[in-house]
Amino acid sequence: MGFFLGTYTPRLDDKGRLILPAKFRAQLAEGLVLTRGQERCLYVFPLTEFQRLHERAQSAPVSNKQARDYLRVLLSGAHDDVPDKQGRLNIPAELRSYAGLTRDVAVIGTGARAEIWDAAAWEAYLAEQVDTYSETSEEVFPGAL
Image (tube, rainbow, N blue to C red; front, side, top):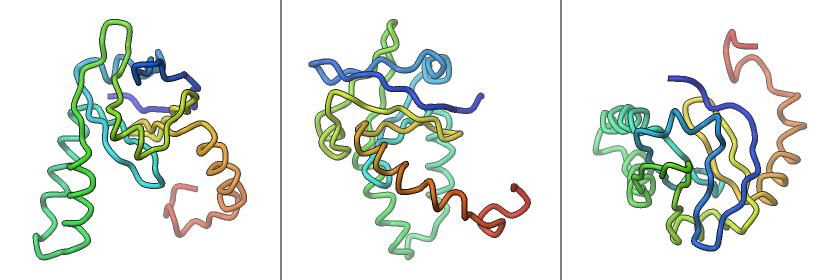
């Protein structure tokens, strides 16, 4: 499995469909899970990666309230799908509303998943994070920087 990298700016059509970036299509062609992400974006996982995430999350003790809360939000908004032959993905109205998606969106690669953001929200988030990014210390990613 490859990584999701880069930023793309497709548009939603009138039916709430998005044409996936060409570079992402092969990784998602066999199926995907679309769900609520953090910071009001949507996460797009290849089906196999979502299954791995779910297995790891299920290993948390059921007595851990934070884990229960996270799983409830993640799974209750999850929608599995297979993109059509043109690489289009239907984004359910509930998820479009959650992420505040308008016609212009940003699809970004974040390694093991892609994220879908409202374009204006992504630009605001990115602008806010640029200074923090330059100040990130090695403690955040030990040995990686």
